[in-house]
Length: 578
Image 1 (cartoon, rainbow, N blue to C red):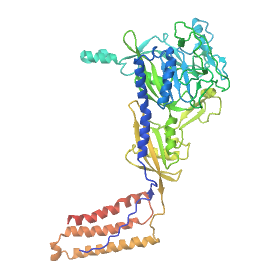
Image 2 (image 1 turned 135 degrees about the vertical axis):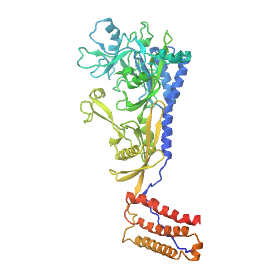
Image 3 (image 1 turned 180 degrees about the vertical axis):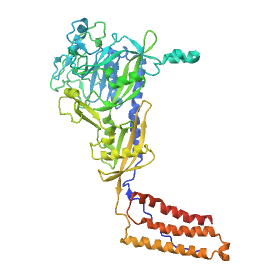
Image 4 (image 1 turned 60 degrees about the vertical axis):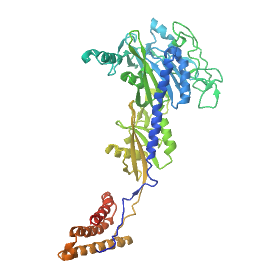
């Protein structure tokens, strides 16, 4: 049997990931999100335990405000989130925020009361009309602006109907076999809700309307409202300080007297409801997305990212959990919503701090169309503020309150992201993964023409039972070389062609001689089929080496990756069989 050298040159696609693709980055990002998103359920369990132990003696009604603010302060110091709060069906709102460190409170009741109404209704609302404060600390009337929303009761909000969720809308009388257990389970799953309408105030309204403000408070180290000099605690500053109004100059000194619900009800008058209050906003929890969604579904949920009422232009997500009480008929009545806020900036900070100055880009994108950006290591926010009457124009620099009425903040789909030069890589890589149905165990290459670069990327799914569906995308830059080709005229050309041609000719000659003398006894006694297959494969293997010649194209890259390997294995198979 003849023996000769088989020359083999392996040339793969002209692409190389400079530092190697780090698959652990996706795992770390997934673990960080899971830790952040799983935190609200732990807090919810703590609150349920507190309520069971009667730590909130008035069951979240206004007299429990300070107790909840102290509790919320402890939660903010223990668990990293931005805001913990609750809203009730009567309009009550209590919350504690981390940055800026402040308490928030809204008295129960409905905004949208007419200012020239001389009836008893106006008499009851007069205390709310005079409870707003300007930037310098002066008392101003709480008057609604055009475009703002308010709640209008149906029969004084005393009508209790089945809640709109699927379980509550079932007809338990239609249960088959009338099983007692099934009837009990069905009736127990029914939730009952009060009825009201959400309306919008416009200039077409005959009279001006007043509102019940949500007030922001300075708080002491424990989280209780204060205006005592030297007691204001702001985690963004060093130590304790004084409580100032929004202008940062005038000290807060508010002691408005009235029979506010915070005082305890029953006509009790106190002057501590607005102590430490330095800012007033028209805000009712009942027309906010986190509240509406929870009332409709009657189950814990994550609201899709939306623009927080405060701070302005901040995108965030809210975990909401329904609150229930049992009425005199034994029914489970929807009372309100407990919620926790997380700004998307928290996720973005984690990504930028770890990957901004690296060769890796990490982005989190909503899976649902139109695939809005959640956060990115490039620092892009995926939002912009535009004029309400002309979305093509950016919002000018105007007062925050005017901006709320004249401008709107819109989100940018990842396909149109352009806040950072690297955003083009995110957009095109995401589209490439989307076209392949987001393969998680596969690297998908993308050529980004705007950057004249190539990226290899991977996606991981992040989802929760409460409704979050996100995609984590990891991109790594790829080095592209166009000078590693073998073309006619180059010195490597002869070193490739000569052995390939000689090998092909030698193998072909042996194959011809073997076929010519196949009737001789020596050849008849041997296994001719395997020997012929071996010689034919050798000839083809040497001929395949010529595929290395020519420019690198997508077709040639794919061909060169398997052709030599295929014929090399094909050459060895007859030897192994024989």
